[in-house]
Image (tube, rainbow, N blue to C red; front, side, top):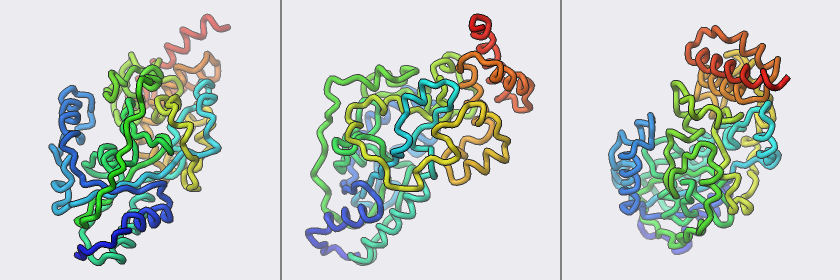
Length: 358
């Protein structure tokens, strides 16, 4: 491996990263000792819920050289994902006959796309400096990506636990390159600018932000609709509204997102009308249609059963409708017990609202 690195290599790397579609690129030493107590306390409190993978690898998540021996530096990148034509989020949430899908999941799944670009960026770097050891990650291994990005200077971790960039808000994905290349770490750590603001805490529909910088995933709608594979606790169902995949409320109210940038990636534009589809339209999808319409999408990972489960809850929260009740009655004896349970809850909720509505 070549160790005589040019003094302007970091700037060159940033230029290459921006040419590859990344909004920014920064380098850290990967030293996360200050973050370990927070992670340990979060796990000890059980805030990870059924996400057992969060504790499966011990401290490998906060010690990059344990995941990839020989790692000296971590290159962190961010990529904007908010589609400009899908910015009417509050309007969507306010119409409880429509489905709300988290903005990051409207288009193509970002994992493979970003990994390919990080691989090309690594190869570009290797062409310039000679052979090096490296591995790329996009939410695909025990990596403490937000801590690494904060350490590198891509932003600060906000009270909602998302990374915020003062010039780019928080509507972005993160990715990493672990390398044994002794690059000069960036020394541009962004100061935490959350101040006294508590908008995200107040906006969380289920009170999942239990204290500043502490999120109880077990209460989080993103967890309930994506990570949880079983029954959604009844206490949280009314609070979910029409959110059928993820939740963006804490980001929507963050004042720093007035500086966010719309994505320039066509792949992140909405597919299958997911930014404005009605709940009944999506509930009518057959399993084959679900698989076809979510091909290449992050949504497919939850499977058809959880898809119907989530929509059933949203239909229970929708305004009283004969069409909604009719569709729910048709699925009252659904062959999937998970779906059936949530459909029956939705029927009961619709019937209670229906009595006083007509």
